[in-house]
Image 1 (tube, rainbow, N blue to C red):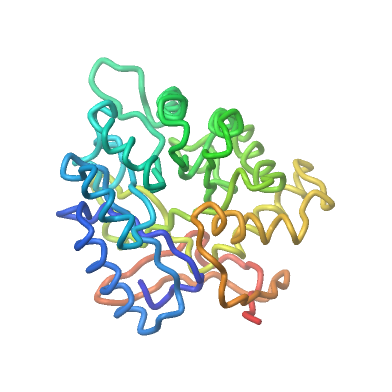
Image 2 (cartoon, rainbow, N blue to C red; image 1 turned 135 degrees about the vertical axis):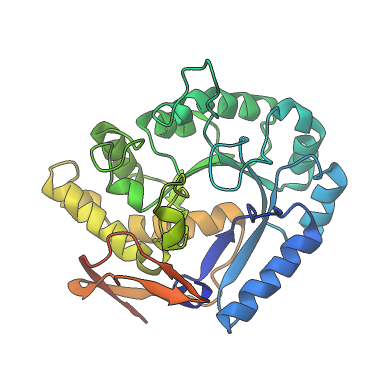
Length: 319
C-alpha cells in the first residue's frame, strides 16, 4: 500500500512479522524498501526500533547516530505482531537511561495485556496502563515519551498531567467510533474528550493515524481479526469530517476549530516534537464534500478496505 501514501511525514512501525525491527540495520533496510516501493523520495520516514531484549544501550546510541527517530514499546500480546513485546519495563532501565542521555523518543502502545484471572479487557486496557506512563515519566523525567493513539478521557488527562516531555497522539478513526460501533472501543464521553484535545491541543497532542493496511483476509473469517484500520489516504479529510460531526452534535463550536490549530495538530506539533523540519512548506486546500472514500485498494496481490469506504468526504488538493 506504499504507493497510496499521501502525507509527507510518516512514523514507521517496527512490528513486522515474523521478525520485528530490533537493529539499526533492519530499520535502515526497511526504510530503503519503503522508499523503493514509493518510487519517490518526497516522504520523510521516521524509523523506529521495537523495544526488545535485543535492544541495548549500545543499540540506542547507534540508532541516534543513524537518525532512527524512536523506540516503540508494545506490551506483550496486546496488538498485532506484539508477541515479542515488553513484559517488565524495569528490565529496560539502562536502555531508558541511555535514551534520556542521547534524546531518543519512547513511543508507547498504552495498553495492559489481559491474562487468565485478571479483570483487564479491551475496555479498560488503556486505563490500566496509565500508571505505567506516570511511573516512567517520574523515573525518567528527561525521556521524551509519546502515548500513542489515545482512546479515553483518562488518557487525555494523564498526558496533560505530565510535563512537557510527554505528548499524546490521536487517530482519525477514534474521533468517530464508540463502543456502539465496534466492541472494545470507547464511550461517547471519551470521543468527546479526544475531539476537545484536537481542538485545544496547544501542542500537547498531535495526529498519529496508526493506519494499518491489513489485507481483507486478515480482517474477516474465523480467526482473530488484525487490529487497526486503513486511514492514511484520507487522514486529513477524516479529521475534518469528525470535527464537522462534533459541531453538529453540539460537542464543539465552529469558532473552536481554527486553521492554526488544525495545522498544528496535523503537522506542526508532531514535527516539533520529533525535531523534523518542514522543508517543502507544501499546503493543502480542503473543500467540504466532492470526494468519496475508495471502496478498496489493491496492490501486490492483496486487497485493503479503507475506513468509511464508500462514504462522501472532503476534497483535498495539494498547493
